[in-house]
Image (cartoon, rainbow, N blue to C red; front, side, top):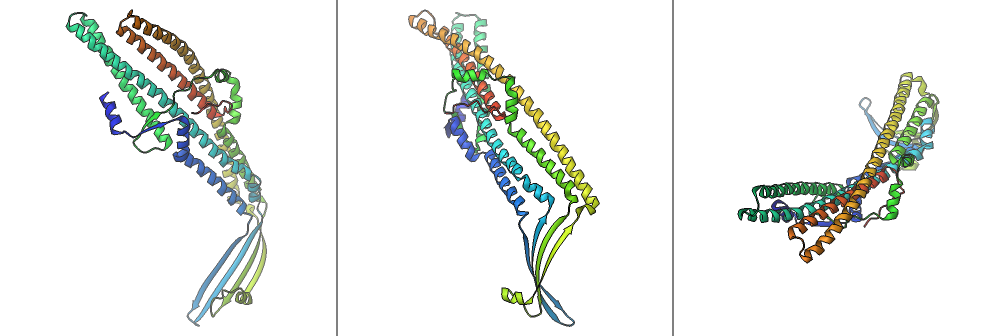
Length: 422
């Protein structure tokens, strides 16, 4: 308790935050947001790189030469323009440019959706362990009071040593549990701080209570079963990315094979040489330049070594893309099945916890009435009250498990379910 008190005193900069505010914070400062921006910029860059292959390339150069015998100076200028008329790989890249651009768009979207999931996961875990900590803290206070009371009775000879040692052991065990819940609370807080990109020494306290499950939302959750697997896999962004990568690998492989076709280039060159000085004006250049046009064809297939090595390399890349797609499919499928099973287990715990909480609430309500009438002792009432707190803690924990499970399924591809954010 003293350690926890010092913890709050030393780091007294507290941030009270809701789930919605946490997501807004993350979208400003999280590294995953920066990663999403990187994919967006890379997609735009790849778009320009692909289209730039069809624009003419230019070069302009000036040089100076001097000979000793006979002593003479030469000034030379050259302007060249080259246009690719036909290159099958460039045309294939242009034809599938939308695929490449979509890949980077999906990459950005996947990172932002993953960030949403991480925020929800970390926030609900913080809610869980914060509530458990509060329950354990109240229990320790009660156990300490009870231990002190039993200790006084033991000194007066009103209780035996077994009763006294049982009270001390119970208090020590509960204190140990408080330390563990404190550790879990701190770890959950650190995890959320990392996701949000917070580097300052702040205490983060969840501002909202764990939301109750509405009946219509509960009905939607109960309908989730293995029939949803295909729908989830169809919407999964990582699978869509793997499919695009395989398509692009096929295009690259086809381009390597089709390099058997000639590459055609049209070039224009304007060159001048003078022994007096450089001429920079267009008029002077035009008087002294030598202009040439050329149409060239090159056949990469005659470089057999490079041609076949390139084909083999692209074939291996295509094979790797197929392996990656299958691995991604199997990993996502396993994640989906695990998530569905975890959600089913969480729902069963929730149903049990709800019934248990209702009974504990009824008992707690009756105990309050009995206490007012003096029919039960204060210690008996405190015991019932703490039983109620334990039941409430377990119930809220099961709620967190459900929300975390839903959040993960939404990230995997189940877009139909929406959670209210406050």
